[in-house]
Image (cartoon, rainbow, N blue to C red; front, top):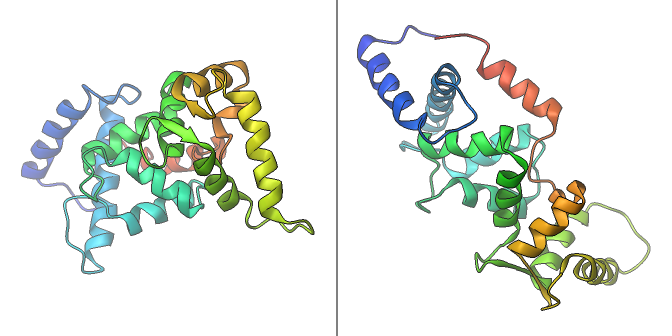
Length: 212
């Protein structure tokens, strides 16, 4: 890693102070390291001729692969939850605030995050159609002698029976939260969009390997 100039160091320190007010689960030294990692990733992206102030979808997807998130549908959903201003790029602030929940979020924070990923059209509900689309994408690699669509429709029906607490034919945030609080495994009910502990450990050891 090249030496950081005094000007860049001051600029990064300003970013650290600003972001630390919103990224609850990282201390200032960790935020510094995450900014440094962001800048490395941005340089790699720029070297492909894509100069930008944030990570684009292609670069972000390659990062998610390292966390074990490989479903196209879910990667799109995760990108959408990180990209709060919906400008098509993940800024350094969005990167760190997103990782705060992605890596270390409380159960409440991760319930909200997963629901947003699964709510594909952002209308505040996970519909039967969205469940079908999500589950079909997650199960497409599973070999089966039966009609896969029929099996997935049955799974959607079972899921609605168990998670649709107000019986309106769709899953609201309240339905989802109540279900997950009763059984934490349902957090990933429609596909894995959070990293496991091993992938988190590898990432954090890499990023936090040095202090400032």
